[in-house]
Amino acid sequence: MSSLGDARRGPLVVAGPVWLAEVMAHEIPTVLLIEREERGRAARALRRARRNGLPLHAVMGRDELPLPRGTIPAMVIEGAADLEPAEANAWVEALVPALTPGGRLIAVDVTDDPGREARLSASFLAGSLLGIEQTRPREGVVLTLGSAPPAVVREARFPRVAPPAPQVRAAGSVAG
Image (spheres, rainbow, N blue to C red):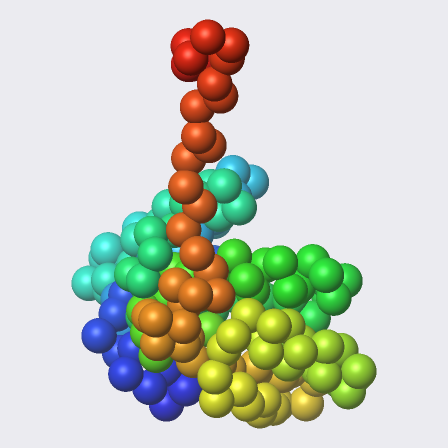
């Protein structure tokens, strides 16, 4: 998949369908982020991958999982075009800090609506992604690709959240 660019160093993180992660594991080490209801399908895919010597792993808790900053060279998501613009923006903005500088975010969506495609591009732009492009590998499917900004831009755009400062009470005592 040439869309991965330098991300072939791996692993690829897939926050999408189990089948997609299984297919991608043929090309690159892949980590599948799953929800609880996907455990059965993921377990079967992991057994097939192990049997075939494919580098596929799964982690449960897709929506709650804290992704370490600047550690993911490529991530595939699906269904972003189905979200309301504010939700899509928030999702992309939550994922971008986890990408390595130059890392790729790839959205796979089933749509042929130019308005949805434009809103998805706008979400990538709102997330400070660079080199945004869209391609149609087949009728009714659009891939939206973008590259993460340099670390200095990421840190300015998505500053680390500091823990709340302790509250000071009267007479100089500090609340826990």
